[in-house]
Length: 270
Image (cartoon, rainbow, N blue to C red; front, side, top):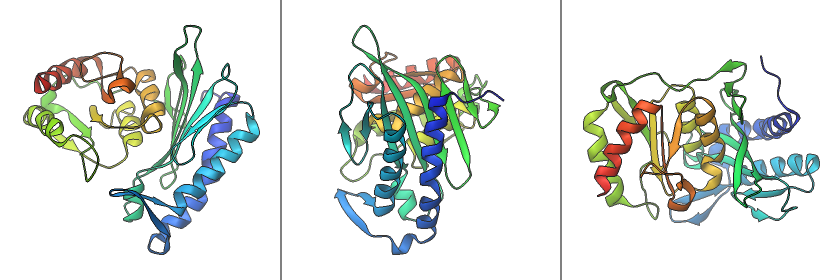
């Protein structure tokens, strides 16, 4: 088993410290205090408590690093140092409805000499299954001590594809419908499980053969994109380029299926 770096150990410890309370809150989901954050976008006290715990653990270990938090927003740090990108509960709607499919996602983004930034470490932890998906740049992607590789399937007719579906106040229904109409007739199935972080982790693990979604936030995808790439897969925007964050488009798969999916998606958007 590869040993965790010190940094990944810090991230793993933060996630695991937040997990027991999330598990307890999930079992008492009907009693949670729930507030509206936006149209059909709920945030629970569980979400906030988990973020506070993760923030405290990360800040204790790396006090001069900045953070980008789903609930707390951007917290400035030393601009020459990396920053953490944190989603304390990806799959909040699942959580609040008692559906056992959600995760904690933590990534590290490092500044480069050219002024850009790069994700170099990622962790996605599923508290209910105790699955820890992790990756470090150049060290591969792992589930606990098991090396991950993207699916080896080559034919769309055998492929199971994950996506997110627009909902009240979120997403472009017309665009999604066009892409769905192009992809669905060509593949073995399409799934919408409600956690983009786990969707990408599952692409890295070969459970899904591909994934597409738009209108995601950096904390939804930062760790997952690194996992897919370190597992031998590709992540691009819908046009096959590297402007995923700028265009808010994400398409992931192995090399062969990515090429085929890209043609279908790009064709649907013409």
